[in-house]
Image 1 (spheres, one colour):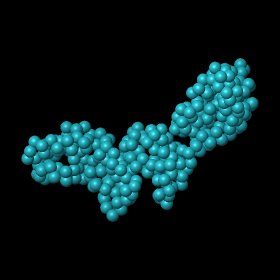
Image 2 (cartoon, helix red, strand yellow; image 1 turned 90 degrees about the vertical axis):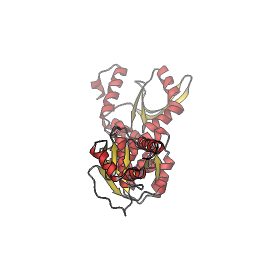
Image 3 (tube, one colour; image 1 turned 30 degrees about the horizontal axis):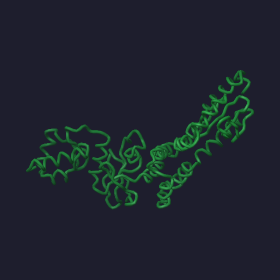
Image 4 (cartoon, one colour; image 1 turned 30 degrees about the vertical axis):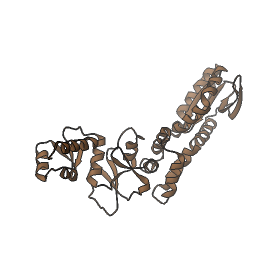
Length: 311
């Protein structure tokens, strides 16, 4: 570090990298191996992975650990799977072990702190965000469903779609480009759910639950004439009790429906004396029992009879 400008540039690099620096970066900034060793001995720098250091004045965080993982594995390393989903903001919590892909010819040693995938990430599936190499949004979502399974993978896709940063068309294009990869059938199922299939599945599951539990006097997709609004269609209608069940797929589908129609429609229903209950794919996927109990109690209150007569 021979100049103030050089020292300032090095400190700025460390700040951008959340307190992490690689051996190569330190050497390029003028630190000798002996100077680096003295930093470590004085506990000013701490090892953060092979040939990588956490600067002591910066607090270690999940973000700094992700940057350290990438720096320790070289410039072609990429955050993938749930690490990429967290980096994009599609999950609230980081994984306990970051998931990083490196080209197959690299053959790094296994590490206890990382899940390393030997995989060359196509340039079309790779971008740089906030100082990290990461898979693009669509690839991230499709990879996440392989790691997490359909239920939790759907939550990742749902949040990505809600953010408006991902479209179903982008998901479909990414899936088509890599349809021979492991987990492709799960990816296809995820896309079908995203493209309206979640709501269809939820409606079928609710109908089956209503029939199985013996709920009487309900109809599906029933038209209702509302004063000042016109004709509305209820997903499931209990006409005698004036109760409507609205079925949503994912939150993404709910947001679209609410923006286009549901606000004024639901206000007109309430003004006409109807009670509206909502359920969705996630609730019914876990089992319809909880929602059916809530529906049963509502119907009993609306009809003025005890719950026992509805069983």
